[in-house]
Length: 445
Figure 1 (cartoon, rainbow, N blue to C red):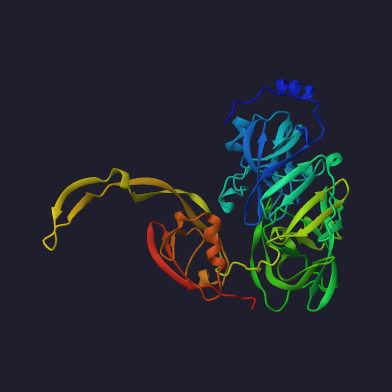
Figure 2: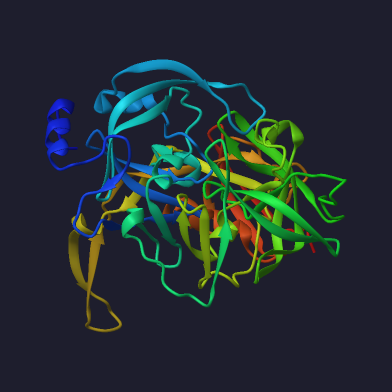
C-alpha cells in the first residue's frame, strides 16, 4: 500500500484545488465519475480510499453513518485521529456495539473526495461481513455519499456514476418511473404497493441496498401484512446488533407505479429483531438488493427522488436456499496438488504390443493454501439438518468437486437449485471425514 500522506499536506494541496471540506466533490472537469463495482449476493462492493489506504466498502442506502469493521486489523495503517468512544445500535437481538468515532478523515471514491469524513470504527471482530461474502469488505458507506452527489446505479453493467447535482442532466425516459423519496434519520423511504392474499396494501419501505434479500415486511394484522400458509422459519441476516431470524414466504405482487413484480420472495423478521428499525412508526419494511438489482437507478437525495428503469434482471426468477445451510469463509487449509511443472522424466520404454515410446513421469506435488468453508447457520428441520450436519462442519467437496474450486457465492448457489436436486457433501468434523447426502426441498410450493 502507498505511504500515508501527512494530513496537513493533503489539506493544503486539496484546498488549493477548491475542494469543499464539508461534502464530496468531483475532482475532474466533467464533475462526474464512473466507478466499477462487484455485485456479490445482490450487494454492491465499491473501492474506496481512506486516508490513502485502499479498501472495499458496501454501498448501503440503509445506513446513516460511515462505518469501518474489524478495525483492529487495519488501525495502524489508517491512523485515524480525533477519536471518541460511542455506541451504535442496529438490527438484531443483541445489545449496542462499542465504536470509535473519528473525525477529519480523507475519503475518496473514484474522483469524489471529502476531506473531513467522520468514521465509526467497530472493534468487535465478530461484526465482520467479509467471511459471509467471500471477499474483503472493510466497511459501509451510505448517506454521506448520497446526500452530496447524484448516484446512478447500473446493476446490469456493474458500475455507479457519481455526479455533482448542478452538473447532472436528466434525459427523457418513457420507460422509467420516478418515485418520491421521504427521509427519516437520514435514510430514504419510498411508497409502494403489495398484494397479499389478493388484497392491495400501500406500504412505506426503507430503500436498503445493503440487504441481499428481496423484500422484508413487518407483520401487521390491521393492515393485512402477514405471511401466507406456506412459509418456513429461517435465518434472515446479520445486523450490527446480532443475527435476525423470521419467516420466509412469497407475496402475490409488489408494484411501483407501472412496474409490477409477481411472486416475489418476502421475509417477515421477528419483532424482537426489528425493535430498533420500527422507531419510524410509518415504516412497513425494507426494499432490498434482490429487487433493487432488477432496475438501473438514479438516486437523487437533493431532489428527493429515485428513477427506476427495468434491466436484464427484471424477469429473473426468485429462488431461495433450499438446503438450510449458510456458509462462510473459515480461514485457509493446505491442499496437496500435482505440480506438473516440476514432474521428472524417469525412463522411456517400448511396449511389447507396439513400438511407440511411452514416457513415465515421476509424481511431484506441492502444498498450497486454499479457502475453507464452514457452516455458520443451519435451519432446523431442513434437509441438511435432518442429514446430520452441524454448525462448524467444514465442507470439503460438493457433488465430487472440491469446494476450494468455487467462490463462496458460486458454492452457495448450489443450494438454490431445483427441488429434488441431489447434494453430496464431503464433511470434516473434529478431524474426521464423512459423506452426507440429501436432496433440496422447496417449502413454498
